[in-house]
Amino acid sequence: MIAKTPPMGFNTWNTFGKDINEQMIKESADAIVANKLLEAGYEYLVIDDCWSEKERDPVTKKIIPDRTKFPNGMKAVSDYVHSKGLKFGMYSCAGLRTCADYPGSFDHEYLDAETFAEYGCDFLKYDFCFKPESANGPHLYRRMGMALRACGREILFSACNWGCDNVPEWIRSAGAHMWRSTGDIFDNFESFKNIALSQAGKLGYSAPYCFNDMDMLTVGMYGNGNVGSAGCNDAEYRTQFALWCLFGSPLMLGCDVRNMNDVTKKLVTNKRLLKINQDPEARPAFLAGKHPWYDGRNVYMKLLSTGEFALGVFNLTETNGIVPMMFHEIGLPSDAGYSVELIDAFSGETVGIFRDYHNPEIEKHDCAVYIAKLVKD
Image 1 (cartoon, rainbow, N blue to C red):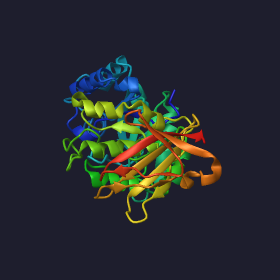
Image 2 (cartoon, one colour; image 1 turned 135 degrees about the horizontal axis):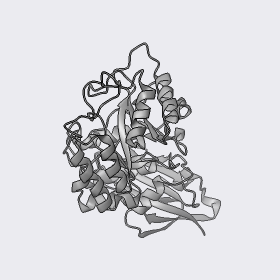
Image 3 (tube, rainbow, N blue to C red; image 1 turned 30 degrees about the vertical axis):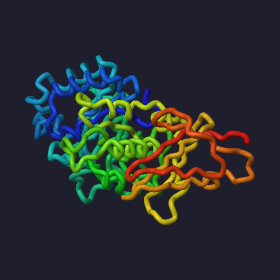
Image 4 (tube, helix red, strand yellow; image 1 turned 180 degrees about the vertical axis):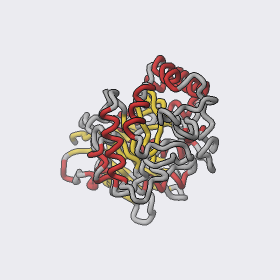
């Protein structure tokens, strides 16, 4: 059964790109379990682009796994991933060719969906490159959505059309379980900051079983890998992960899970942050305050099904300083008779009980996240 909360897992693209093979996938599956990522909820292992031969089989017309990278075939890889208690994901594209110039699924949607089902696929990332100009984008995603429903296997549909064609307005009707609202992420602060700030008008479109995907995480990459760039420091990765959790994005790890350091493991398995991301009501965050002089010092709030609420305080500017939280912005006037108790989501420690406001000092590129509740005065 596909969960109604944001999907969690690992995707090969950010670190490995085209350099994927059977051994690497098996080692990654082992690492996901050994690092207790599966225990934390990261259940999907997804192979991205570059897994197939360059052309379809001339007789069957099926896409064929690369014989060098996957000498035992894709079903054997899928079986190994499943043997670890994980779910197995694959990649295709709505166009004639994938983004890395391998066979796409255009006009082969039903055959390819059946092929993925034969492999034991549980997740399909469906990209948007090399689409004929005359082809209607929404129709192509609806076509694959129907093909997946006809294939005889439950497969999570991850629609990756980069936010084109007013995608939030129709993608849920196509049967997708997650949908990309952005271009590709790169491993630097500016990249994930710009993605987060682009979400202002999109957060309300997420709902159970269909989530706004802000792209795969670069947390823990440190400038290495396929989308490695300037890299980020631990404070910046903390900010990225907190934004993805608060905004309800799917959490698809992109670092090399075989070589995660303890800081990264502790961050991505933080139960309080995951509680925010995985809340079953899936209510959207909203902007609940910003500094009057510094664009990028923002406060976001998200209601939780427990009766608590999450407050994320972000300093996306280039200088240290306060980020004001004025509680009237979250619906709490001064005469309400309530104060706000704040629990630090990173440490679990009680920060205190505050009335009217709290103005934490936040270093540049860093954040504070709280699990909050109302307390009668």
